[in-house]
Image 1: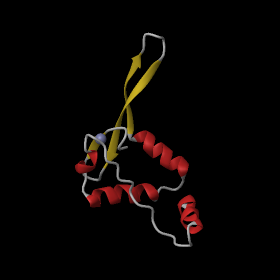
Image 2: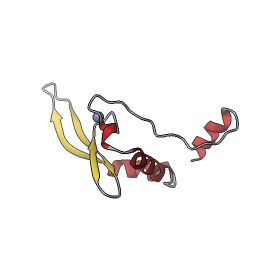
Image 3: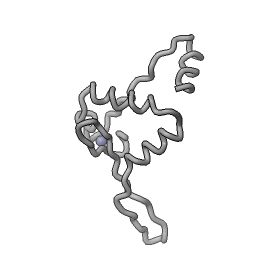
Length: 97
Ligand SMILES: [Zn+2]
C-alpha cells in the first residue's frame, strides 16, 4: 500500500510489510485463529487494490443484525463482524474486528 510504504520510509527508509495488529479483547477472539490464518487474512486485505476496494470488502464482512431504538427517539445499529477464511467464516467482536 502506498500509504504504508510512505509511512515506513519516513521512519528511516525501511519498507516492511505492516504487521497484523493483535487485539487482546476480553472474549479472546484472537484465540479463534492460528497465526497463519491471521497472516493470510491480513495479507489478502493488503493486496486489495485501494481504499475503496478495502472499504467495500470490510462492508461485506459486517452484517446488520438489528436496529435498536432508544426511548429518546435515537437509536443505533447492531452489527455482527465476520472474518473470512478460505475454510470458514468466524464471527468476532467489534473490538477485534
Ligand atoms: Zn473479542
